Image 1 (cartoon, one colour):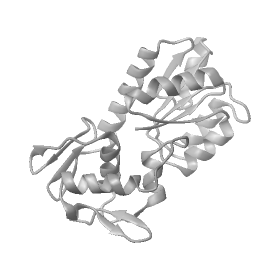
Image 2 (cartoon, rainbow, N blue to C red):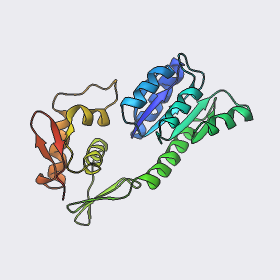
Image 3 (tube, one colour):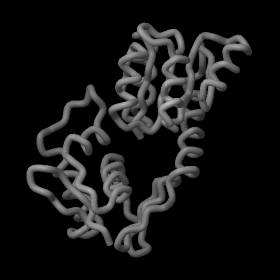
Image 4 (cartoon, rainbow, N blue to C red):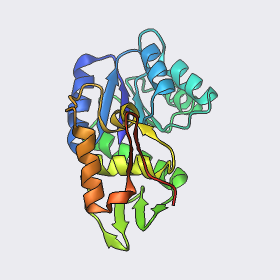
Length: 219
């Protein structure tokens, strides 16, 4: 799962990113509201963690613009503003949850899991494609009724391809899904993940479009 963290406190931002990485999240981190709005407009995320007191564009303004544009991305506000009026303003602006600093990391992780569960159960049905079944809520994959064990990036890649069958997805797009901005990507990393999926499922599942990217042909 790809999370955008918007937090201008460097120590806190680094601490959150470090705490979430072992949980299997890809965390991209920005420190001002204007850059975050641009990223949310141009790229795809599964969830955002949003501070309110941000430079260049306040978190509430960012959230209102996001919702005005029709973006349904789950948003957790993480802020030191603890007055009831602040909570109401945040929720009315379109936040899905509100957590006050200081906070317990275990509670943050639990709230993220709950938001993602609600998001997946609401918007993502089980994907069925040529004998492959992918359940976004349980993050389970089967082939011809048998469970298939996938690494995290293999799962994310398969999900992206099956969610858009027949559409060629570029290398840049797929790498954006699999890797955070600060992660080093080996030149053949994407090809390795595709190879593993073909081996674990079946070779014809993913077709290479040379010089462009990959697609899962329509059934």
